[in-house]
Length: 274
Image (tube, rainbow, N blue to C red):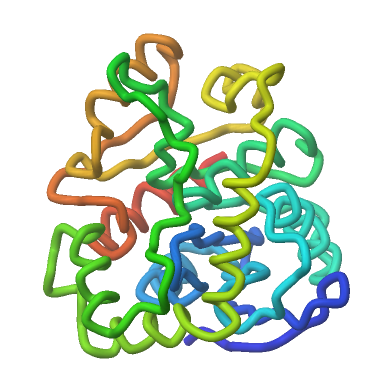
């Protein structure tokens, strides 16, 4: 059974769920309003049973972790390294869902000595865009309206990201709603304001064009019914013929909710191999 604790990470009071023993494995939630370590609650037992020490933090601006003045993805990426230091972990596997797949790949490129293996879960921006896609994935993860959502709105948002609607229980909605209001909604607004007011880098390649720079093993997992995942996965395989990429049927964006057994098998078998 997972234990919940709070630790200091770079001056931020940080909530962490942890279970199991073995190779340390960070489970990083995405950036949608209401995201938190709780998105992994139904997966911790299965991954721990397969020989992993799974650690799921609330990232800054999410869950019960203190908000930071810096709401950027870059700050959250640096925060992950500080988290490893606070936990006394030299090297860890990283599973990044949605926008956090960017964090996992960025760390693998910049700090391969700290990263064992990477599992990318449902990160659209790490797949080549479709020719007719227009704006692309600039808003990946920061989904939500400009007013605090009601429980009904939270349920509706979850319904758009989960294929198996029975996974959307009253408890799941209540947790997601609690993580969508107050200081977390303030952080969401700050992230949105930062994106709309910031300058877009034009001289750097998007991460999907840099996957050949990653020197640690990677596995990509997507829901077949998640947005344009299947078409974009085809483009990714054409560009990177050796890419370890899996599409799970009857599955949308919250892969770990829709198919927890298959997710656990694909993730743990990869992370514990060799």
